[in-house]
Length: 398
Image 1 (cartoon, rainbow, N blue to C red):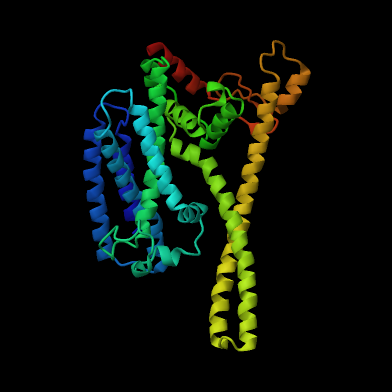
Image 2 (image 1 turned 90 degrees about the vertical axis):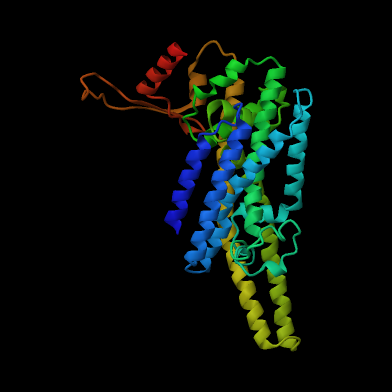
């Protein structure tokens, strides 16, 4: 089943990559991809009916990860089709229209903040309730009830996960739309925006995130008044990077910290609960069998939460250390903005060490690799000769 799902998603991503959401045929393209995604979802449903899940772990993985990935894209393009079909004529009120759509998305996240934090934190202790079929009768969330009439192909919360994915993608899409409108209003050439395909970010997504946050920290764009998500969306669009991954790296970390705090509180609460049920057992308030059942469940939950806290704490520590290193490097950059003479003091503040490798003459030419390791951020990979030549060639033919 896993191989079948991966094959389907490869086809889906290939079709989606061919769509130009900034093009003139966005409505036509959305309609076509919606039909395509519906067919894939129908085929996936047929596969599930013919090949039962091997165990509960496989079922949870399907409704928590696999199905929402496909369904989320279907919802995403449905929303784009709706928004673009109903957009007002002219551009005077278009930014306000897009802003209103984003406000509705914020309201959606506010309504589901607890579940959103649970899902994005990577927690699993409620998965059996959220992502196993047969729990629909106990669902109290009105946004989850009756989302899918086929109880064999939905748990209710799989649809909520899909909608979360769709809303995140849609928010980024609208941020790009609004950034483009602002650029046009401020006289930025449309030709410049079309150049985004000529230049690609070749570093990692997290490096681009750090650059965007450095620009925001130094107030280098619009005097620091540009919202960070809009700035990230604009930079990602120009450099051909999926801005969802870029921006969510930092927002996810904020959610992780909040989920970490909640997990710690729950662990402490479980200690208090366990103490109470122990006293109830001793006093005979509850039966010993009931005590054993409850204590086993609470201990299992506490163990999982403890492991979760350990994992997340390490991830947060690494993230904060990386961010602190970059902030320190950005501080050095700000210190020497506009410098006209490079001195040994300046070099020592920027450079940790320089590694000069032995000459290589195997190609018939003498080549010698030099590595520069910077303070705080380590080594930065620069483009090789072939990449430089290719960029120069594109520049001449542009």
